[in-house]
Image (cartoon, rainbow, N blue to C red; front, side, top):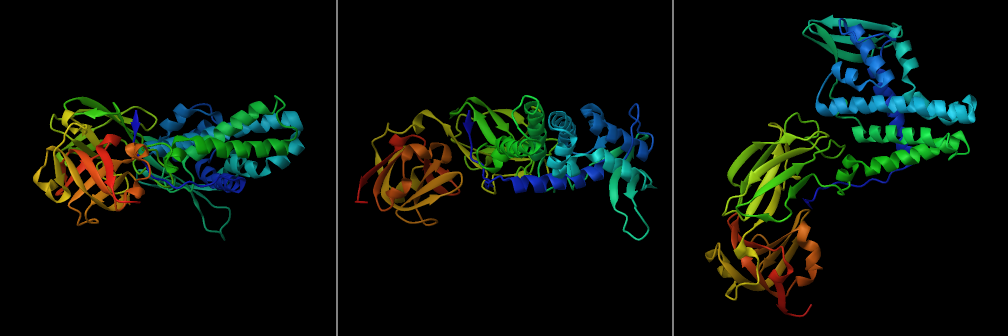
Length: 437
């Protein structure tokens, strides 16, 4: 599979970041958890729905949790990760208490406990809550006393006679993504297994080990790798696209702090065209689960370039405003088969011809997804450009060393944006022929 470049800034994980994240977790949980235990799901009133939500969180009941919530795919996933983190904390707390004693465990896990031991918070909130109903909407408010402002703990919506928790946009704007909460759950689950196995000598050592594992887990998550540029959002099969053949496009948006604008999309559409955005098509993609989408399409016989981006009908993922561009291969475009030479200034007269274009490198421009090599004049006045996409740049070495050199560019000349260019994907398409470095 061939992967395409995605951008993202890497952030160094540390224990302080983990601590802040866990503390912020408590605020989200206080908003979510409002009631006491019950025997079965009940959506008949706002308070009953809140109790159902609370029990699902407490028992790790993902099916009920999803049934009592209304929200986008990402918001539901976020809430499930909250639930798993709470359940994992209970396991860790019990394992540590059995191994090191309650006093040492409470001291070591105090900071985590204040964020994840939410049943007590929920029970306390329940005794001081009010329910305000306006038509099909309801708000549960916690009011400790008349002198303080009453904060909203949850919003609900009624549909077909049932009340459901309305997952709001605050989850999208959270300082930490669902992947961060997932990392918390995994690290605590592992720590709960390691403690009785004797990996840690003290509860404090176990807590530190859990925090370190949490940040490592987060760093390995698909969302985090997208942010770091290690996991690409768009990929194609086969790796070498051929005109007249079929291909499969895979898109993994992942909702992240920095990117993944379509991570919560209910439907994703592949918006694509050929040879500089001609013959544009909007093709709905098929969900593969886990925020992965696929689409199959046929490449026209005359295609030499595939242009594409993604949308949910309102928002766009267009690779940071640059779109994605891929080479579509034809027999005539492989380079090394022609001996006819022309100067860079003549290239615009020879579209769709396989030739050798000669000239002096006036500018080498490095972009996030490609490199431009402009002959005779810098951009935008250059009469001809060689384009090398990021997937192929490693084979060409240090391209900046071409500056000032005379070169020969082999391949089929194509028009893009009203300018002639040749896309280079094989090293024998570029040869430096003169001028000292």
